[in-house]
Length: 265
Ligand SMILES: [Zn+2]
Image (tube, rainbow, N blue to C red):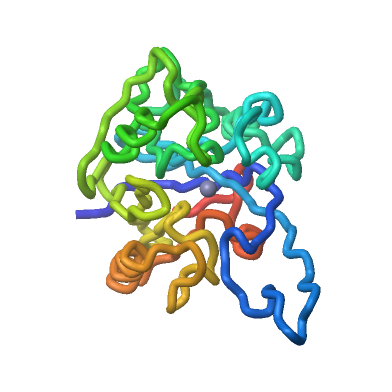
């Protein structure tokens, strides 16, 4: 049977800024006897979302940071450590959807890799729509159970919003024919990756924060990457000779096809 005609749009929403030492370990970045003042590793940390156009419905993977991050992230350490300030007006989430002539009501599914504030920042746009909001059960249960309003990068007001149709997944799941979410925990309780089988491109895997960048992926996995989950991604990727798109890779984002002009099919 022919594979369904799927198109994948990768939307770049500009960059947070951060010290890469949060994400990677690199010996040259460390203070040592011969390197007393290691250089700053401050640089862009891109954020993207993925639109999957499928004959049986449209799926969005992740929702990036909100336009009003400066107010919205008050009290969250990310405001200082990962400020979302390298962004142009046309890169904001709502604007990118408009460039594809889309509106939140056009989505059947919104799949969340996890509920950190740079991935869950625009879930509220799907309030009172028919979109099913897909998240791993462990992620949802962990995130609603944090003490207080914010813990690390989990910010309750991102996801504790009325009028959302949550669906909690508890295992690898094929959402639409050729479109799967698979478990890759470690970055958070229930981090999931997206895998899409395309007729021309072949399989694409979107790792989200199970692997921040190519350097995190290795082999061997580096920095905050979680070994078991990275090896799980590598297993799927080598079996299917997949194209891997990393969660926050400042080099890769410049090399891939970006919406609205370009897509993968
Ligand atoms: Zn992230």
